Length: 139
Image 1 (tube, one colour):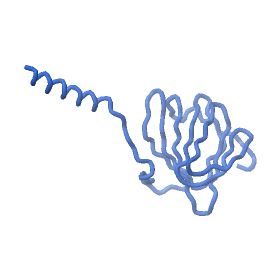
Image 2 (tube, helix red, strand yellow):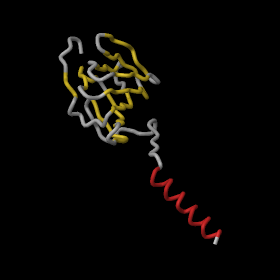
Image 3 (cartoon, helix red, strand yellow):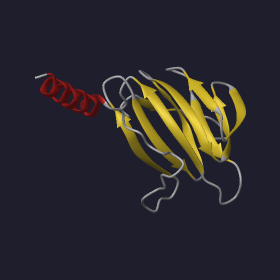
Image 4 (cartoon, one colour):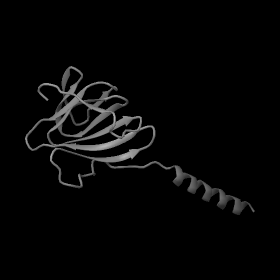
């Protein structure tokens, strides 16, 4: 009887683990899947609390803000100049940038024929509907 209980409890643990296991992605290994002019993105994960998106940028992300979302951007590859509110800062591989909701931000890739790869994490779940474009001189 103990043997069957052990087997049953082991199977229950295995199935429970699989039902609640986390998704693992190697972001360095992911490549863009299609040709693109300026920006292409690939959603990694999304639920009601958060959306994670991998984004490749060749030139510029135009100035905008999010009315309902805060965002964190982690630079995986490349270098750029980022507008955060009224500040312009240099960003590159390894940088993590926090952007509170309502803050105007933009990005310009630095270097000819270069591409930036970034991970954007937005909370709560992001569908793009709260993106408000802003006219900003020089961007």
